[in-house]
Image (cartoon, rainbow, N blue to C red; front, side):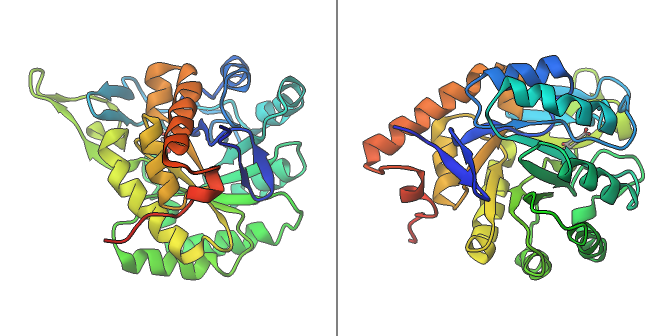
Length: 310
Ligand code: DHB
């Protein structure tokens, strides 16, 4: 059974692909994703200039997930724009650019460059939690609205979506949704890592990572319930006008199926791709297909949003 799906009219042969972040910085890493079973290829969040990122150690696996404070290490806009034609020649899969400004004026420059490129989708990263002294844009509704005004004024037909931070209160879902309704947003990616968490090693009496005194973005199993709630809430409010991409703690086909029931059009994986490598895309897809078959759902659309109410 196929798990093919669509985001803003762009076809993905599989429901599962990579989240921006792990193992998607260099051409060699992106080639591995392109050659894998992943439904699409997401490029590491790109900034105007190349960045080394934060000091090491800045990523650590733990039994229920991962913590990171990478600080957006990436090759910079020019390198990725130059890379797109080579990637395009390598794979027919959708290529998804992710971008973030270090200041508001960077966003239109980055967005325009990718609008004019051969990528299929653009994901605006409004939610990196690891930039020292810079709050997550998605928690500042005024700035979110202003940026969306500026970016959608650029025109063009390339589908543009937003990677959101997790929200933890219905008032914030309502406020965010009221803004998103004003723009032709193609998709929402829910959620980025849960920012500014702290994991400590009691043996060494230190945090696991060095930047920001150990505060970093939490990923993996820990955050799945938060991600499911955000997908469900935005799907109920906005699912009729934009696609919803789920991300956060997906390790198995069963996890992916839970996101599907909550209304996700596709899912991304971060921590499990980091831990298991590119084989995870085929495994999770196969597990999801088996569940759909066993339950009698003919395709992704048949199960989407079908969470039953108690
Ligand atoms: C970074 C970390 C994240 O969790 C994220 O979603 C985006 C960027 C980073 O620090 O590079």
